Image 1 (spheres, rainbow, N blue to C red):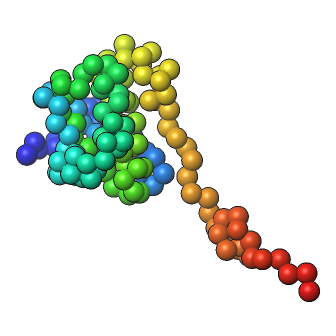
Image 2 (cartoon, one colour):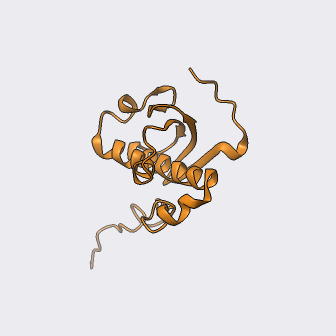
Length: 135
């Protein structure tokens, strides 16, 4: 197992909903490791999640040049996969500024800021009110 002692500038940080991903790109042959587990197994062999994670590298044709090592916590699988995607895209821009004009128009560098709305008192959920009774 690769020891995860990297410099701060080699980390890509991605967030989505409650998920936070710290991503490391290591020269390799295209392996994906999430929380010390094979990426395929961690993402339950779901093609949409795997395509989401690999999207930034596929656009730059670098998927066979790097191994992805991600440490993720919080949220569900969808949020975690999207957080990893954002972390990879940010790290690729840190590594080479020429990647930014390629990734930005595709929307891979945009942080999706939608989060769960808080519950308000007097309501059942954030916006769901109890049934109105006239009498």
